[in-house]
Length: 173
Image (tube, rainbow, N blue to C red; front, side, top):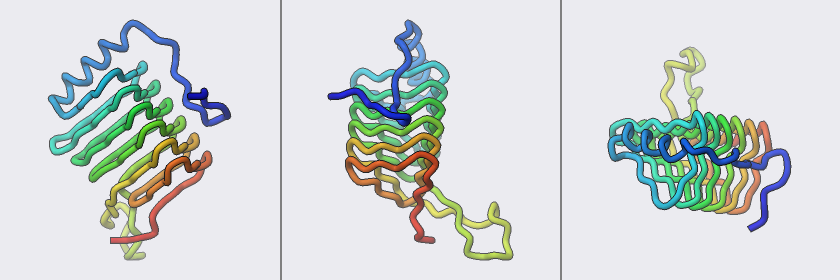
């Protein structure tokens, strides 16, 4: 496997001795809702929050970058083998977010299976219902830095979503 190149490459920080302790603390805090399959790398400041009914699965070789965050608020998040979550990137799931093997989500990117709706122009956006639909990021796909992938999107295997791009399904509930 070749090393990633370019501005959106997700490169791990140098190894530190506390990574194993961070993973153990995360697993304990998740109360059985965080499943780790194989060796996973957790960098400084990474967080995983799993609410009741939620679940997070980290496959062998996956990486959570420094300051990154995964929140499973009732849904399932799965990071496939060798998938990388860049520094300060965020994944939020109310239903399901799948990141397949070898994929990379760039720094400060957002992947979320919810999106706002704008059906009633007279109501404030915060009072309108959310559109919730699973997100699938295919094998070896690349999500650029600061990009946003919202509800219902499927990113095909090997595809690239550029930096600062927003991908959102136009479907509403």
